[in-house]
Image 1 (cartoon, rainbow, N blue to C red):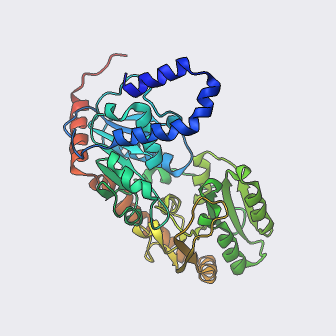
Image 2: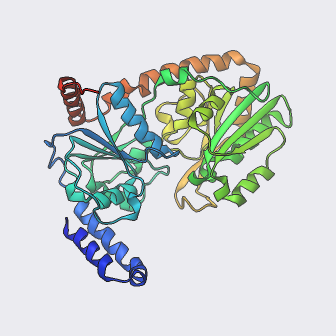
Image 3: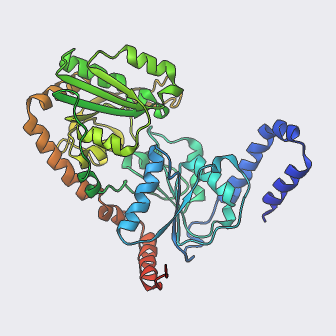
Length: 414
């Protein structure tokens, strides 16, 4: 057991619970600083470590960071590379090693943002995590939080989903590599579209925990109303989740919605979300900032035309040949939820988006053309094969070695 782990055991054994609770605000930052110092490592110092490719993430979550871990694990496995999954749920609540030391790995891939990766290392013990470390981080504004730049030193390399996020990490104390999310067209081909609620249906999705101001559902409503007014033959479905945690924001959104705008605030199985997108005539994403834009990417894979703000992470895979791109100016960040502060983000042209909606309603052939082009774009840039080419050579080599070892392993009797 590490010195920090021994200290924690003594502290819990000798100090009354009330004293520990009062001391927590003082001790927690000290423990975090200790973990931060231990987590720094010379890049490539243990690059020869053997073992599996191990992915650490929130595999059961419904947010984008959790999805990224699942997609990466599946992409490796689709290419025949065995991986080990390590669920990080609960890592944020421990700053000292718990449990036995993990075995070495040929690559540790943390699909966790900087604070969560630091917490996970604190739980495992930074010096017990033997093997090259890669952090997969995503940020939505032009400049990442300053601590992230220095905390990059805990990784051999930081991976990000887009060039936009890479630029936000300029000055990081580790190399930064763009590794987009991989998608599987065959999964989306099997989705049965949900029945439409009107002759022409648009859909927009967001999570209240990811900042309603950033996702801009009010912009989607404004564009839809400008395009169709109260026409019952047109419908906008706003699929949200976690509105119960932000009741005032949800109530304000409902107050601004006419009868042909349906707001569904619920946690659905993702298969149901994909069916909703597949059954719609267009996905409307008038975001003010996106680190990547997984929902627009999945709409391409589903063959649903996309109208999206022409800014931030989506620019790596969306352009006017596969989507209708909405021009946008820049405006200071104004986030009533307080998730984002300072800097600037986009303000999409609502009138342009409204004209794009009417264009797709009046010209179904245009939508079909965009849908076909979108699927081709996914194959070209977001397939598991395209994803694998973006990985560092050390990880590719480790992956191929793991494939060979897996094939040579004797079959287990049942």
